[in-house]
Length: 287
Ligand code: IPD
Image 1 (cartoon, rainbow, N blue to C red):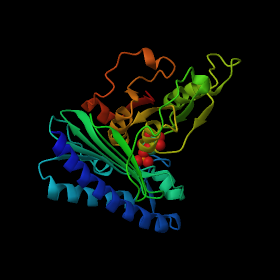
Image 2 (cartoon, rainbow, N blue to C red):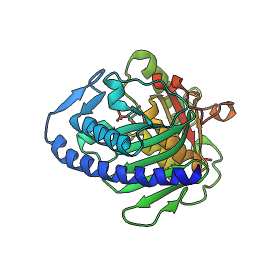
Image 3 (cartoon, rainbow, N blue to C red):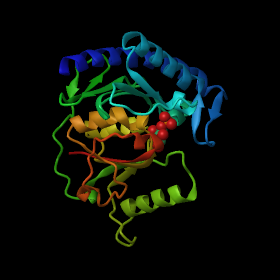
Image 4 (cartoon, rainbow, N blue to C red):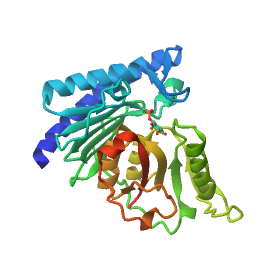
């Protein structure tokens, strides 16, 4: 129900702001400490703050929405891997951009998505460092609230038509899977995107950016600062909230990994299936 989603959004926004305070406190401490743990390798990081923020969020959701299911990055890593059902399910990345968080690079956020009947229907992405709050509800638009300002509808300006990739500002990410098959596929796409016509398939995009947070990349496409974001290997908590925010701003999200031919792919962009729980590829393009 639209009204119910609006009330869940108000709760989720409060939660994101509370979590944001904890993230800011943590960032002071973590930058100066060596209390960083590696998950699958030395580029897949987790800190006590990722865990603390997830626990805080999980606890508050349980109090207010005791029947909702919960999928969170850190509980998933610790072995709690629920099957995706038709029931309302929060899908949470407590700190998206953990590497930035550890390095004191203020491009990270909390990402809170709600999935219902296997579709992402609500998203909240909050970067506490610059106090940018992105929200979206399926069918009700997406918004950016800066600081204590009023929500502004996204995209902030009507996008100019994008005649070709050569005029595009594109985010790509290196991710944490650095094995040869993945890195070769990524670098192959980067080469085609960045290279000029002397590179086979080169399209010379105006710029490639790699800023380290999937959720903020989705949100930045919604805002209009990026024309496109391409990545392989995201997890549902990286993309769930961002998908709603991007879609509601007119963006297109697909599971295609062929960045140059994505527009011709016939993919239901907003279908979240349990397949996503195994990690997938994402592309989001401004509408
Ligand atoms: C990661 C970031 C990164 C992206 C990875 C994500 P985390 O999330 O969004 O930019 O390349 O695919 O897993 O680990 O910082 O929550």
